[in-house]
Image 1: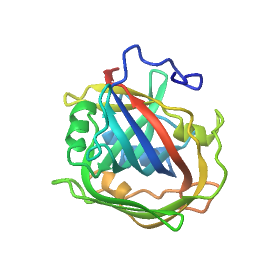
Image 2: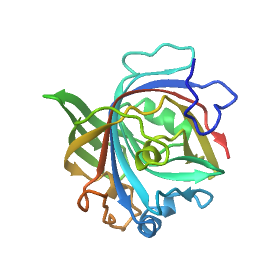
Image 3: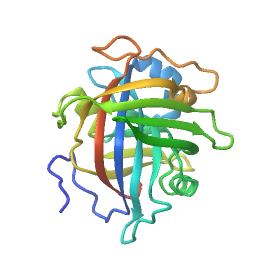
Length: 258
C-alpha cells in the first residue's frame, strides 16, 4: 500500500505508468538571488510558472545519482536498459498551489531512455558518458555530455554521507528543497504539463562533497550569459548545501496539462 500521509495533495486518480529506484543521490544546492535567476535562467521557465522561494530566496540544484529497476507498469525491468546513472540541474517552481521541480537539464547514460523521456515527459534529457562507483566509502561520479548539438557539460565529484539519517520537518529548508511531488515541463506546443510522482519521505543525511569540475549550471545558462555567483548559508560563499540519500523508490504518472 502506498504511503500518502506526507503528501501535500492526493494521488492522481489514474494509475502510475513507470516505477524506478534512485540510489546514492546527492542534493547539492546553491542559493541564488531571485533577480539573478530571472536574468540568467528565467527565460527558460514559462511565465505561467512562479519561481518558488524559501524566505525570499531561490535555489538551484545539481543532483547526481544512479537508477535501477526502471520499468513500465506491469512489465519487468530489463537488466540492460533499467540501470544507469542520471544527473539533473533544477530549480523550484509553483503553479496552482502545487510546488514542484523545473529541470534545466537531465543527463543520462542510456541512449534509449533519453529519446523516450524527451517524447513522453517533455523533459530536456541529454545523452552523456557517465560513471558512478563506490571507492573507499565515497561515491565517485563523473559525467560528460555527448548529446549532439547540446552545450558541453561536465561533472567530476566525489561525495559521501557524514551523519545520521533524518526526515526533513515541514517548514524547514531541507523540506522545501527535497519534498517535491511533481515536475513541470513544456510540451512541443509550449503548453505546460505537470507530472506527479510518489515516494516515501526522503531519508536524508548530511553530506560531504569534493567538486573537481562542475559546468552543469553554466551549460544551463542562456547563450552568452555567465554563471551567477552562488552562495549557501550558513556556509561560506560558493559552497553548496549538501544532503545524501541512499535509496528512494519512486512511481511516476504521465504528465497532464495544467
